[in-house]
Length: 564
Ligand code: PEP
Ligand code: MG
View 1 (tube, rainbow, N blue to C red):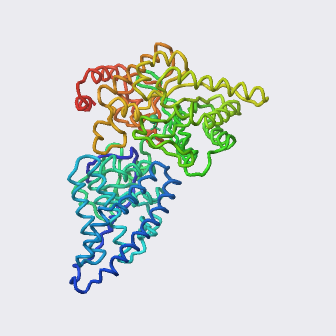
View 2: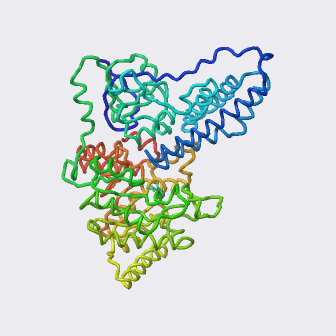
View 3: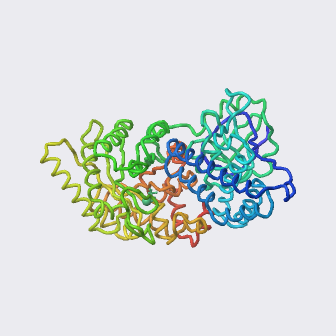
């Protein structure tokens, strides 16, 4: 038995037969420049770009259906590389200098890959995206049909589950994987926050990255266990017991979990669309802590009707019968544009018209329609569990405006004789302003939910999308921890529940810290629910509080990390 280590990406365990993924394209040496016709080669390059763009658009649609809109945007980034003038100029001038199109693509892209790899953090991870676009073009230029219709998991025997091994995987390799066939992914390189890793997590495929050259010790056909929670790969060609332990993974726990000393912490799922409902129910989530309703508004020409919204919300309530389901009202703007709404062009969209600001002003019509659907859903068969929260609140008048809108809509529904009820109401705490007046917010609502993705962005003054500044966008920076603590204290003083629904809540390595900071509920993508539930059951509140106290006193993020 051999054991290798790497960085876990998806906290699940899988077991299967190792299969090396080899997509290297051997172009050989370029022919002499005098026998290359630049006109033909330029036309071939142009044609390959068109075909690649069309294939990327198809894959984008497929990823959007299977894993969600945010993940599908990765393919937009690929189209941008395909159309980047620096890259296309580079390829075209290499062709004019006498290289065939394929060699010119390889030479130019490799130059950019080297540049990206020389940078830090997430910029380096963009090199994977560039390689992906390069290989797609090369396959087209050498006439490999997998460039347009890829079949990533073909193995010699279509019945066996495979563990895919690779130097690195590209996002389109990953988006096309079939979780029923692929029991795991292990790569030599690649980062935890690379797009391919995010896709693997969304598809709930156990995955480990950064194993290094040691991965070469595994051969095609070896039987491999991938423990994505601990970043452990176990190779043992004979051990039958391995198979038995593999599928048990972090055991799915249906029902509430408690710390070792009996403190209940609710573990809920985030939903980005009703397509994610079944995995959320199956994950053992205690409810839904964040239903991002904006996904109902994307990828269409007109807004969803009141009835469509009612149906989507009641589907979730019916699937989580008796559990709490927190629906967030429309949070568009910022990084979530909706073309048919003609949102304003802004130089700082994250600081502009988004979230509740749009709902109370420019798009009050959409807000009222949504509230009608929600108040009707609250009176549906399983509507008791419904809770509604408002995004990006930064002033008390905004909150009061939203609460008044609820009252107005309720009065209209009553006048019409339409059945409705008032759901539990809450606020997302995701601006520093909301943290600083969390006590005044808590007096007016029934719950608070901390959105650490935006809160980190605004507390640290760093764009959540910035790759170069990714280290600053880390909720472990002490000021963010202090903001969380302050919110919990404000909620406690008013006796209202405080939950967290940003990405931070789904990292099992931070569970103890979050219990120590006093959160009542953690809400996350469904795949991490079992691992977080297990961590809660291993946590003692006293130790957790002690850890949180020390983290709050730390001077730096690295000091916090070392405490963990
Ligand atoms: C957040 O900001 O943490 C959050 C959960 O909302 P979103 O990521 O949708 O902005
Ligand atoms: Mg947010």
